[in-house]
Image (cartoon, rainbow, N blue to C red):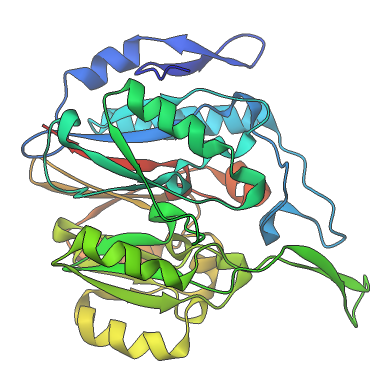
Length: 344
């Protein structure tokens, strides 16, 4: 398997094909002070709901949702183009019909020292241990990163761990979000229909012991998740701006015991999300700093009030419609991006 620096275009038949104009544009631009921000994005040619492993992927009857693939491809291309126009280098993960979850590479793992400019040869990417329906993606990501010259490392397989979706820098610490990792299944319910799907969460708190020495001397702060609809931490929390010093936070999405410590740590830099913005996955956003400017790419439909709060902090919000990925697959802007750090 090989990776590509080119990204798919849509043919007349509605399927992606390799193109080089955008890649040439990205190659000549610099997105960070001492280098260029690299990211992973997964080619959506085979995007579908296969496992149905979060509440967004199924109807109330438990049936898996059907993806409008042509619309999804158009939305994916718009997000890719927005990021390229900001000077980001997009490394595309080739599609695999057997692995539709590759469109969400935030789950692939996490890049060590993601904000420190380094050449590719010095970068270290720690691969995730995904849930069973997506476990085969690991070898796919490993091959793509290796072909780009990025070394990959494994996380102890005793622990379920879904990468930067649950482990990310925020200010001077790392937030590790977690919850009960259970067997996903249908169970009886006193409701209509008389059953419900149990989804659980994706990262085992026990992985903290593995992560602490990797990011030392920065401290790891554990945050327990509460709502299955916000099954990853990056759907309820987003650190953004210079030094990732600001924080979007959905209060009801995390344990009550975690809220006050976040308020104390971030103070006026914390923005509490409304129920409406949280439901649109406003926290599932991508932060970018370049040429003295700071941007936050968010899903389209978030409130004007939230956009104003972001601007008040000196950050320019940009919105992109990726609704097909949220409504059918349970992932928005950040889920669609794996951050590979600043390449010098």
